Image (cartoon, rainbow, N blue to C red; front, top):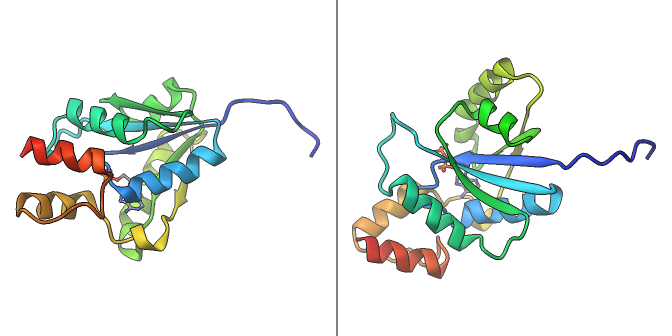
Length: 164
Ligand code: ADP
């Protein structure tokens, strides 16, 4: 390898994280080995009402990720590409679970590339056992009194039950 100039490689992993799940965490752990830093960007998505407030989603994600040293959790309200630029991130990371995720993600990455061609979107897949987990199903099971322990860490489960 010729050029060894070191620029910190930072990835932003954006989403609602309502709540963070074992699927998200699996992806974040993988990414934290590939990048110098991974920023979890939690959106204040105005058109999507959330179960947890932005402050709750941030604090729950921080608790779930406390052992990962190069991972930071931040909230943001701006355009994703502007947030990425402000954080000196070169990469937007998104998860793909199934083909059904692809169409929306492809459109989103195209729009973001148009808005800022210097920021690259990378897709990662979780381990197979996490591919069926979604925050929306976790919320539904929780609200109906079901067992969510296989889908979120213990600390997150306790906080969610307390919230109910
Ligand atoms: P959004 O509200 O933007 O759809 P989410 O918070 O649900 O975001 O998820 C953030 C990102 O994580 C998205 O790219 C989504 O596809 C991905 N993701 C969600 N659940 C999983 C999972 N179980 N495994 C891998 N990636 C996931």
